[in-house]
Image 1 (cartoon, rainbow, N blue to C red):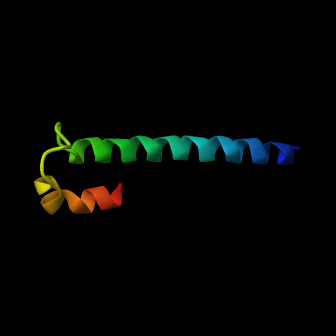
Image 2: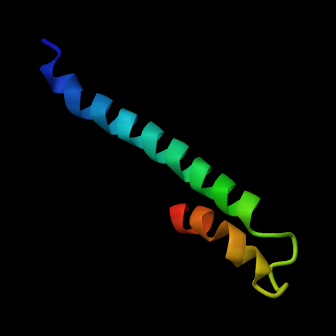
Image 3: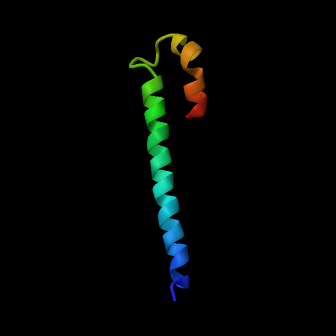
Length: 54
């Protein structure tokens, strides 16, 4: 009876998961990069793991 609803439901779940992951990636980048990104790369020395994660 509900077999035809599996694909739209799966697509909805995939879209929600994608949007959550995208927000997390943007948050990681925003919290890692300093306010002045043209500053010499000292911030890369201690936050390179978070940038690589993003």
